[in-house]
Image (tube, rainbow, N blue to C red; front, side):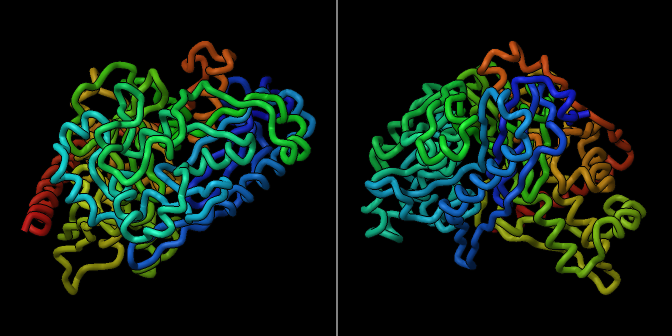
Length: 498
């Protein structure tokens, strides 16, 4: 079991915080990464979006919700709190906000889903050889990364831009409020598109071409770096946490790999939440990254190659709502009865633009082949299959840099609650799909990395991986899906290359 009762939990414990796009979650984990049952907190968050492409949140509200989560966990953990050995956190990435000279936020928190910087991408591609930049930073030019964002913001909000003295992520903002100073981990920085992944420094050629200075970004640190000594306001609020290590925030994707037991190249993590991602942890150099993938960092020793899709559970939810279908529990059985690719539909599932593999932020969704006989359930099935095809395309790219045939471990609430979708993906990939039984992989991942940094775990492999049931592929279905993938590619070429 991935959880343990308080009376059986082994200390030291780690308080783990995950700032996501929909909520802040906090848990207490024991010395081998088991969540302690009955000790958890959740506070909802809201991301504001606009038709113009904005995706923003209130950074101070996020911190207030985070403090409330810590309050709740500390109250629930009262008998165990004296044995908390550290605090770890992760956040959704990328994100950015601007501070004034008083270290107050004067911009909203801008999230990775903001597309308003799309118009700056072409200029960057004209100035730089994107293949070289991609190998150096691990990132393509795209509105979700900071090079395009800084250029756009400087033009769109010039007066506000001039008032910003420092640009930081929400994890750094949390640390700044708690301790009066903050740094950014290689992990979070790698999601910015500005980190040289080889030298682990801010990329000088890119920085020289942007309207910001190097000293407006935080110093870079490894994940083992920590702070102690909370400011009085917080020391009084949580006296037990005052003088224990607080580790800086990591990217939630890196944390999710660790938390789901995907610690090495022989396991690839497939995470399907609102969006989707395929990631692997490697400890060897990757000189050249296949076009379409990114390569982030877990820490100074470990890289995180993979690809992210804009489509995932968000598409599932949108189809259920838009087609006025009943809840998932009611449609699951009916979905399973539909034969693979038997609906005559070809779907490009880009409701929120495309990320991997082509990074066409302007792409939009398309359903081709509708007829009077098409049913809402068939459209739903075609949408789920379409996401599986995009996952398969990214997986084939990722395989090119992995030394062996990896096991795929799936997690994410949007996926693991749909056995039909799990089977579709297993059949499309043509390989077994194992299910992670860890409910909160990102929270668990940062807890395990904190335990490793503290020396409690000598090796992350000492922690159980909690891999659960396996969905085996039907290879006859795979043949049908391979033809459907080629059909999807042809439609993509006609619409996107014209």
